[in-house]
Length: 266
Ligand SMILES: [Zn+2]
Image 1 (cartoon, rainbow, N blue to C red):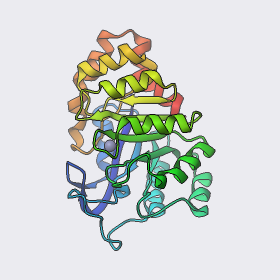
Image 2: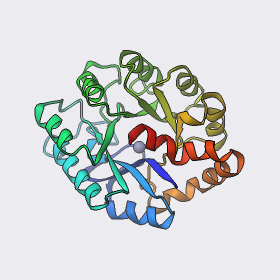
Image 3: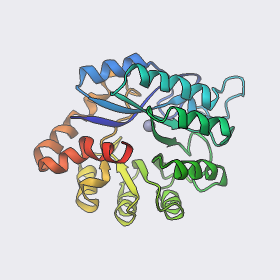
């Protein structure tokens, strides 16, 4: 069994992120899963990006509203039942929590696994008050939060540690474990906080093993950012998958490759 806890689909009118993506077809993700034997995924929609690749706020006319994007992703999950769970990529800069959102979540809880928060693409520090209502909602509904982490003054691993201390019953997954760093700060934070986990996305193989050694195999989840680098995003992770299966015992490898994700996100 293989579960990718970190994938993206969606279509927006402006390029987002360092990879300048704007069109990640849902069918392409399913095709990649089939091609590389990925059994299940957690997916979030790039429509959640409020700022473009040049870090300009996208005009209101081009933004996709949270609920519109979430409806599309839930539809996608429903047509691929058993293979896809949705992470709701929230928009704290241009929107907030309201009754409609909470109602939508509770009536589609069977397809929704948790939240995605991306401080960099919301140009909002993770310890900014604008994330607060979303964290309170996640805590109330008992839905884990996947957070983009990077040492950029917005998505710093230390901000996730602050949130994890403020919400001790809420689980956080620091994806990338501090993108562009040696991952050590993030690894130490994961070790020191029972409710913080890490993922393997864009992390060097040696650092994945370092994280497992320091934090334990139950704290690290397999994640890839597919299909940001196309159908063959998974090609980049074949060496990691093989290394995990050959160098760890079965229980530890299974934890990372699917069991932690199942346990955390249901
Ligand atoms: Zn991502």
